[in-house]
Length: 198
Image 1 (cartoon, helix red, strand yellow):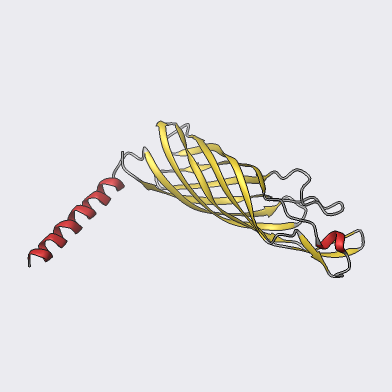
Image 2 (cartoon, helix red, strand yellow):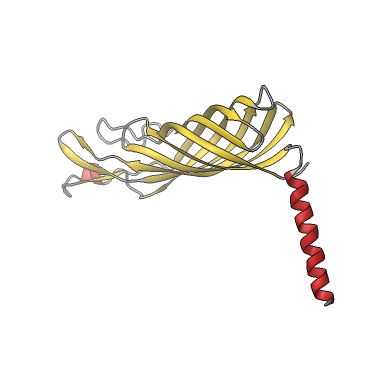
């Protein structure tokens, strides 16, 4: 019986703590979201991603934090210099700092994530339908590069809805013929704010 009372008391404290966090002033929050978009060209057609971030409101209108997640890029098959090329899917895992500017408590906002995008997946950019095309079959994909994700949107206490551009810059790595390696997309997304207390 004593153990049951302790369990009930512990659950009561836990529920109280969660309720207190939910009624906090949203100074510290964890954000979870989804995004999707259309590729900006090259070897990909579209992307779909998950966003995870922590944000601290330094002032009521300005937030700083850290961001990560996963963006999956869907490959687009191409014909390059008369050769049919099957590009490979890949993913980007960003590690970035974020900033957000909120002119009002509810409404328009803007900001960006800036950092490094780690590219994961198949080691090769693509394979051609003709296995003798060594030049196309053996091009290594880049490992990553500078990552940027500017966004603009609408926010309230719980939700963010936004238009965004995300890009991992890889220079000329992974280029096949005139096909540049693309790890970028323009799209839309949404995020849910989970308060962490004051």
